[in-house]
Image 1: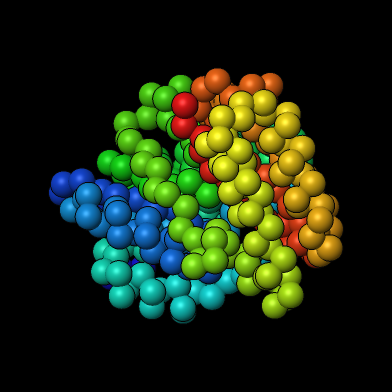
Image 2: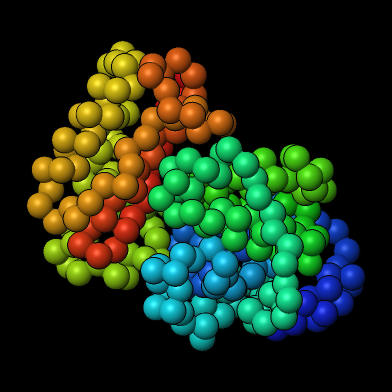
Length: 279
């Protein structure tokens, strides 16, 4: 496994690769969800590249960039075990040199949900992903369904900018009790960890109501919200959404594929999760 720290090194190694390249962009502090992306990439490609970069431009001024969990030694050991060929770990000064001033804005789909709560977040995401795609030049790039809006934004960017790669969606990996795996789960106390299950319970409730024939999205949102608010350690709900799975516009009725998503604060940690109701 080769660990590369500069853009120049990564480009040089990329020129040597023959055949398909699967790419998994991460911010590190890896968990089983990341490793599942790696395994799918390895099964479908001749080479696998994983990036580890905590991207400063997607964090707001009051968010957790400085405290975001990091453990490079652990991450590299996990990737070596998965037989990853190249790990790309650029520095912020290499990705965003002095006088950097170019940004990628994916309009509309980036302005709702997470975009409304975290202004500028998806500008940072789209920009860094575009840069990584240009540097790594993957055949396919792999993203988890857990970050559903990120997937919509990235796919829209790839389509609109005619990028020569395929974006692959990998289902959310969950703990046995249903909690979606996330690097931020480490922030949860044991009590908060139990309370965090309310996210999955709310999504399961939506699925159950829809399976029984309920198509009134407003009613389902209300039922989900009431369930979440019944959990005493919930410190706030940023959104409970039932939206068109492609445009992310809120739906009054579920008459097409719908993304059911939510963002909830359990104590201080803020967690997101989602499911798709397929029409």
